Image 1: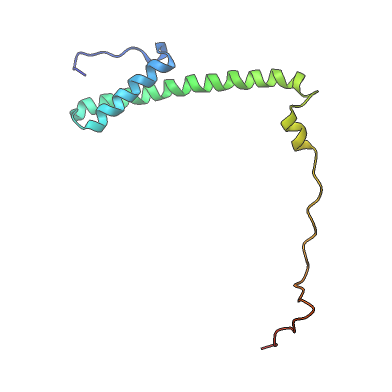
Image 2: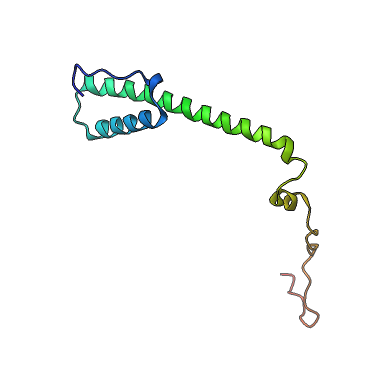
Length: 112
């Protein structure tokens, strides 16, 4: 990074572009070769890129959840086999013994 280098506005970057640039910045900062001023500039750029990546991911998640909500209206009438199995309870577990039973041919332990 030179002093005259300018950065592209993060809002115009795709997720992949922002992620790749962020990765390069992290590598550069980890090397420790940048001056303090360059490090601060890189850090600030990294924060802007992180925000942009988060916006992309939040948007993608919202789109996926929106698609799932649309699918639930038709899918709720016929649940998937996994859901059908989960909704049908199985037989109850066997009862647990309430006290320890000694074998008939063994005397009980002494009380001390």
